[in-house]
Image (cartoon, rainbow, N blue to C red; front, side):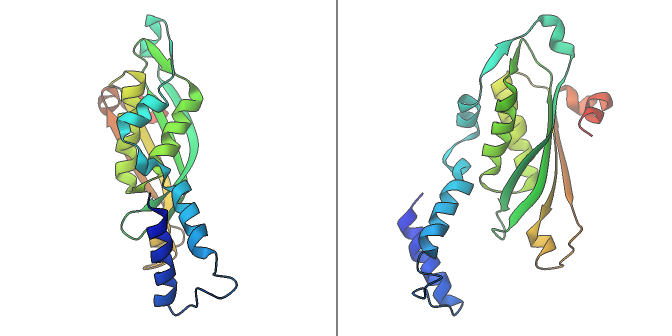
Length: 186
């Protein structure tokens, strides 16, 4: 991430909206915004494959466990809409997968969701990214992801529909064909 460019452009943006970037409250804003972008867009620095490697700690499981789904619900994330750079908030992710000889460490599932969200995103792509990363990290084709969230490009601007929520679902492998597995994500 090019911090100098971010700071330069934030200063220009402040000027463009009629603010004085040298006034007391704004002097450090360009640096603060660069700090924020570095933190909230950290996932931009990594491919899905790299995230799978980073958080791919697994444990061996018994073969008879391969019919049992692992489900983790209410993982909280936030992201930024790539169309408006607006906050996507109050987002919860439910993830399920069927182990194929190994299971992911539980914290790794939440870390995968968090890192994938730390990009300029579309909610639909975020679900696909999480499914792809979980599939690679856990070594299974059977993954389901449900995301529910609010988008400030809908709630705070434009139509300003404050109560609207967006729900997306991504299914791969057995999750595509089995309603019982899909129901586990609700």
